Length: 442
Image 1 (cartoon, one colour):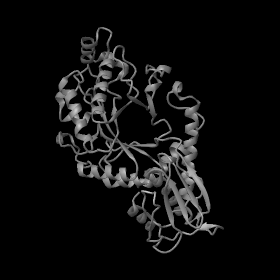
Image 2: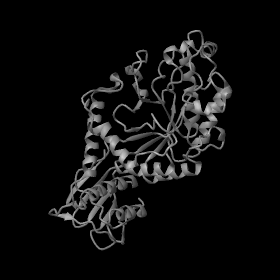
Image 3: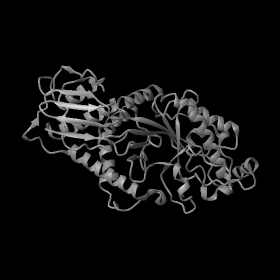
Image 4: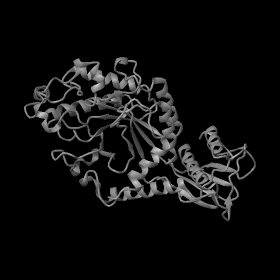
């Protein structure tokens, strides 16, 4: 973990350098984010990885912010939900890089491990491009700034999942390349849709992925989108799709077969770059001939249409992370009024807390199941209940009580000395990061 970061965080809490309780970071055989904290006269943190030590210090800082001290005690933590995600739509509305960096710090503070960054939409392409500079919006995150965001996320043990939606949601990019749009379909909108019947359009999609992927060298996952490509309820009314599907896949094939083939091709392209692909669910599992790549992860956001495929038992392997169904905070970035390029009105930390309240702590439909009923099961319900409880604990801890004297409490006094166990790879100053209440992260 970063000594500089921890020192800075303690200074922000008004904890000066000085003599006081010492934090000892000790390495053991705990896996991943698991940790244990023992608070006595000094504080001992046991973790097997840098991520575990980082999560432990977040818990200690929660108590310092809330109460200014940490009571004596012992607590251990292991994640119940290993991927705890946040999706930011930074394409419909521009979010500047410093704001996103602040957001990442706020997300790390409440235990988020995955940040899905949506950079392209019908309304804008919000990240710098070397291969296609003509498609970039005037308000965007530069490539240099994107690398800073990626470095910050890695430092905070957050995995960035770049989100570059295709073959739909490309109106802004295709405005500069109208020759790559899906042909007219008798009045049905196609200005947002890539013409996946053409090799040139497929090559454009792959080159765009390569251009953006270079900015995220540490990322291991990628979101392709795949949703709302055309009006799926009327897909047979797009003559270019219907003709190409029958030509390539036989007389029973439909536009869904072409879409599935495109998603499979882009998934293979991403895997060649070491990125595990994901797509939204609404256009998938609806093809007649072409089978969806069995290793592709579906992220569930809707089953709004009666003709969408239900999730049968043999298809559940595709369902990976259920997003935007009450278990993951989401910042949509929409702008019902005003300038989409205007700076965000909300500070990142306040936004995170409001979203956590909305998604976990203030849902009057708490008992209702959402998302794909057939795949949810009792396990899903238990996870959602756990996550809501977790988030409410975070909010209580962040609000906290006013600082008060408590028996057996460790006072927050920082020291400039460095302490490290011989077996520990972690270095930290000995300020009092203190935590005794049950951990608030999963």
